[in-house]
Structures are given as C-alpha cells and as structure tokens.
Length: 121
Image (cartoon, helix red, strand yellow):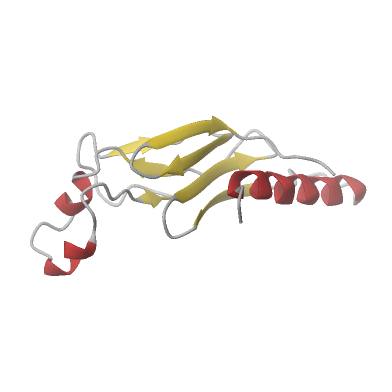
C-alpha cells in the first residue's frame, strides 16, 4: 500500500524465482500493468526475456480530451489526466510516448520514470 513499485518488483521477483525453480525454458515473466491508489497511477513495463510487450503513456495532459473532443462524458477528466495503454488509441502526432522496457512510471501531476528490476526473496 505504501510502496506499490516495490511491491510489484517483489511480485516479479517471486514469479522469476518460481520459474527458475521449475527450470522453464521460456522467459518467466512478460508484463505491462497499471495500478492506482486513487491519487497516482503506477505503471510498469518489464519482461524476463529480450522482448517486452509495449506500453504507452499520453505525453500531454490536455491531449486526453483531444481524443474525443465532442464527448461530453469526458468532463470528469482532470486537466492533468494521463492515459496508459498497451497500444496507442490514435495516431495523433506527439500524443503518445512509448515506455521503455524495464521502466516504472509514477504518474501524478508529473511523471516520474524509474528503472524497474524484480526484487528476489
């Protein structure tokens, strides 16, 4: 609850340790995920092997509303809203930034980007 990125890193470490004990040939873990505490969004892109599924974050907070400019249902999006998706929803230039593999994001008013590594037990 207090350190979501650390908790995710421990979960990833546990999965990799279990996979190693089972002597798996394939990469143990492939994940892109997002969780929220109601204030911040935490997102991670990671894979045990060389290929990681994609993860994108909206670059400009105001751009979220540009996705559907005539949709009155979007008024609940704050001016600093961000979107995290596995694939871009549209091809608006400058809308999306791909998150690098092995990266965690902490998204609030700003985006903090951290290196992500599993933590073993």
